[in-house]
Length: 387
Ligand SMILES: C[S@@+](CC[C@H](N)C(=O)[O-])C[C@H]1O[C@@H](n2cnc3c(N)ncnc32)[C@H](O)[C@@H]1O
Image (cartoon, rainbow, N blue to C red; front, side, top):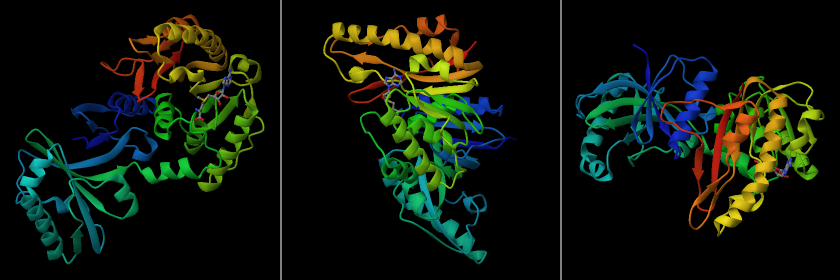
């Protein structure tokens, strides 16, 4: 039987599922994915990525056993979760049960933990459990060497396993806070940049372009994936910021040195094709749309903003069609405007169809655009394939 895993997903479930789906498809890995709760997917596959390469997965749990019901005496998880050396530190995470269930079953959890310790003791191995708080967070896992035993309830059915990979939030924080140039008003979250890159199939040696590179967050994540990057921005200060940030990432992560002279330059994205000598495999970008993403008061103002953007999007998609290979993917953020009365969108489908792109079919039931809602802004994303 194929190994089963549970992927605990980030807040944006459709985006996380799309990312996993495309990550597997771009590698021709087999994937059988079933949603088993609001925020968890059961994955059967021969291949499993490191959760750190995904932007939308928090933990990956390797399932070792399934039970019809929870019984602390029945579960001999110790044999499955590895022994963790001479003096193992265990943690326990329970998903799919309410806080009140956890309160009511505190004793049972303790019994289960004691059973595990006793079994290990008989084998001459020392172990201890950290205080049970319902869940061992990825931050906790990043800081200490803990074996995280997971009980995942799906109704009465219980999956038992252990975390085999998790998304280390401290690394994201380090990149966000320590890189030389940050412009908070234009920066895209690292998590989202990663998701976009994975949707577009960026991996080792992919030639990927971001023609609105800003401070270079998308490119920085692409460099960490060993992709070959091309970045540009209309503003020379931004190109310089990207250069500084990329050099920092390379230094910090001990990556092979790049010479950016030919791959980072100043250009208006709507004239980029003249500067691209060799076609690219993927384009991942968050263009500039001025104050567009802020909440604006009237649908009339929104329409006015949209009309300006239609021209920009039409000219850049036309340029993208010239510089991308056939079957190459574009992952792009598109403006949408929230007004007091309604949401106003541009007819982006009309634009990309005109220039020879189609919407990538990711998965039944996951319709585009993907949306990322925040208090004051909505990001809409499209994944396109060049015909
Ligand atoms: C939303 S920011 C991109 C932010 C970037 N994703 C990051 O994480 O830093 C948009 C960038 O587009 C640039 N820009 C605006 N109009 C442009 C154009 N016509 N061509 C190229 N770049 C442009 C701006 O200078 C700005 O740096």
